[in-house]
Image (cartoon, rainbow, N blue to C red):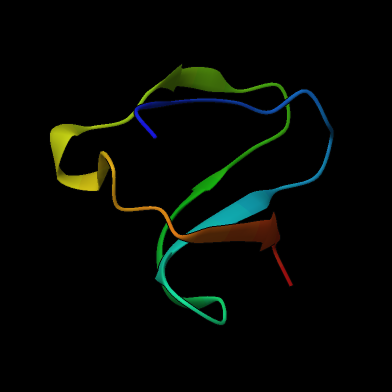
Length: 50
């Protein structure tokens, strides 16, 4: 994954470990763009932030 687009109103959390562990960043509703180099190709799971 190298870019993101959140078309929903919810805040989405992105993780780099299975089972929704090790949050690396969150994306607010309506946001889109490219990930910084440190986060590229690290995402293994995502969900609406708890």
